[in-house]
Image 1 (cartoon, rainbow, N blue to C red):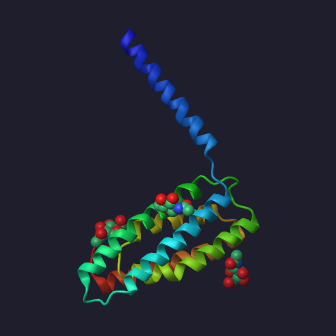
Image 2: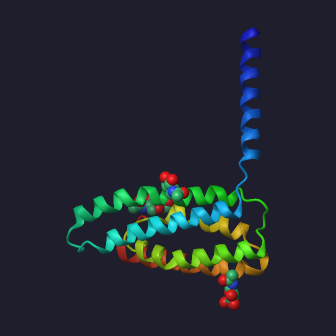
Image 3: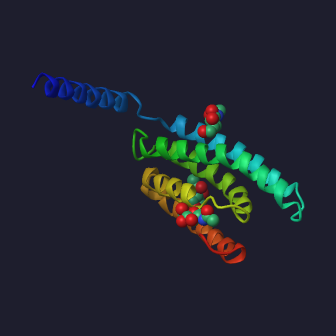
Length: 164
Ligand SMILES: *[C@@H]1O[C@H](CO)[C@@H](O)[C@H](O)[C@H]1NC(C)=O
Ligand SMILES: *[C@@H]1O[C@H](CO)[C@@H](O)[C@H](O)[C@H]1NC(C)=O
Ligand SMILES: *[C@@H]1O[C@H](CO)[C@@H](O)[C@H](O)[C@H]1NC(C)=O
């Protein structure tokens, strides 16, 4: 009985602390904008690495992609976490517009990079989070970006084979 009680106590403490943590960790539009800036940096690095090797150097290319893709996927996942937890939601008009503009800047670089690698899962989660966060009147802009990226995934998958 003592043992069970102490386990319950630990469980209650964990639940309490994780709730407190969650409440104190709501992200802001500035967090999401910083995350997107980070994605832009990481995806540019990756895209440059991909483009700097001739397609025949597949081992070197694979190593370059491997070292640059992992931090990019972490950065995308961080942006997704912050976007899903952003407050206020929906974002203000100004913040929503600023974020759409940032995503539009990242979009062509992602599309270029993903012709060679599989960013599908991480990117889809971020798209869904952004669509949930933007104000209704610029939702069409966000869904247009999602459509363009998804179309690029489809054509990349068709070109580079299965597994997408
Ligand atoms: C960018 O993202 C990476 C991977 O998540 C992280 O390690 C790094 O601290 C981030 N940099 C900035 C400036 O947020
Ligand atoms: C959203 O799309 C419309 C129509 O293309 C455009 O006029 C407007 O400037 C876009 N808004 C943002 C925030 O990019
Ligand atoms: C690409 O990502 C999709 C979505 O998560 C996954 O189902 C698929 O197995 C991945 N393909 C490769 C080659 O890693």
